[in-house]
Image (tube, rainbow, N blue to C red; front, side):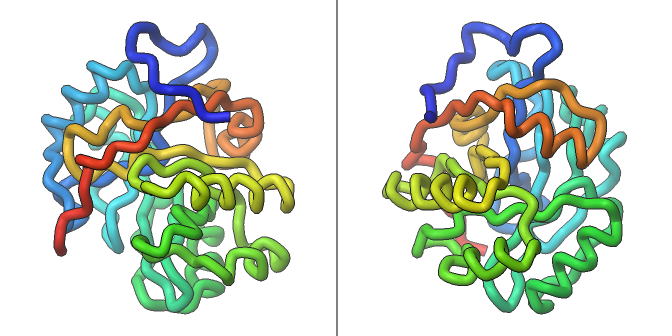
Length: 220
């Protein structure tokens, strides 16, 4: 179940508020600066930001955490031959337009997590019809079950059904490309200290989100 965002309170003690899918100017098609991200993160009481720049890894988690004023999980939204995948907990960039299988191999070689973002939205480059086969092959660690930029909620619901069918945890993200989109979606989950505990904590997560039509996609 998705509940409307609530910025009037912080996450409960021992839990963190996490936006699992965020872009900045480093993506090339977004306009949010790190200073603007820091302002919005503070305003919406977000504790952890997964920075998932398009085909780009910008800096280190430690440096970006200091700049943003919240913990940063370093990630990348990677274009593959099958559609986009997100790698989280990365320390090296994964090149784009490799096969999905090779991208998964490179993400996991770093100890990272593979997530399928907006898999069924035809307006975004998700893996779509290939998601079932990838889940069956054990290539996917988590599925984005709510993306705030997906207009047709049936596409989000379909992602949620797939995650449930394969016993995979679900992520939630604003997919913000501008400051106004930040805070549109997040999870509240038990705190975590690495990829494995991140996935475990997601299973207990509470999901918050709303569609933000004004957080449009910018031309690259």
